[in-house]
Image 1 (spheres, one colour):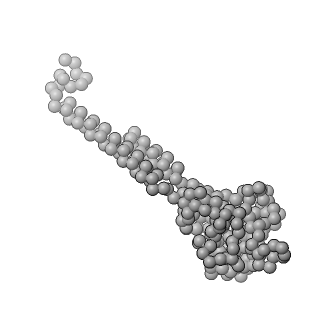
Image 2: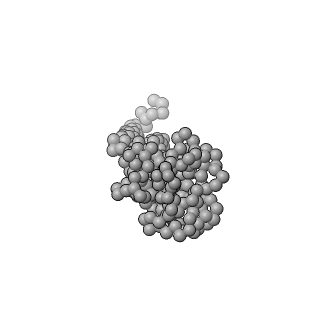
Image 3: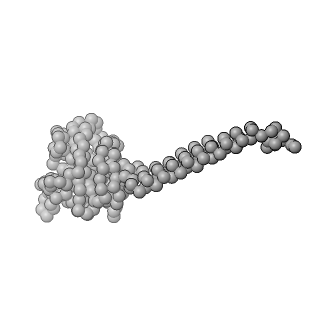
Length: 231
């Protein structure tokens, strides 16, 4: 039992070292008075950096005020301060997209399942409508917050007034977006975990084998020579 518990704790520690619930959380200030529109004529997004290979499994945000379908897209960027290059997207920069639907009014927390494995690098998550099969027949809204120094919010508005380009940083505002998933373990760490488990299993097996052998030897001794018997 003791060795089984040890093996279990070892596996738990190794697993917890490899997993991460939140790969990125956008830094947020105080809640802003009004949400931002999310539609075919306005996209919103945040940028982040991953320094290890990761599997993204979920996006958490605040959305509402619509009964239409929208998209969430993962965009590859040259740097974490860059913006998408296309109108709206350039060939090859969209790494993955998912369609989701809203069916309520008012802002509510929402989880969007997202399944993609990515290499280290700079990325953006963009929400909008009218792309990748989404309809956005009715604009939705995204929760907005005051920016902090490390916030990365940006928007795409094709008819932005000069001198703003269609893709541009938000001015003092950002969006509540968390990227969730897990770090993809390096082969060397997987091997280390397997070697550790194998070593503990061998040690447990050897100890039990020796214990059985000792018991077997004791049963073949004369009664007066067995441990615990007086001569």
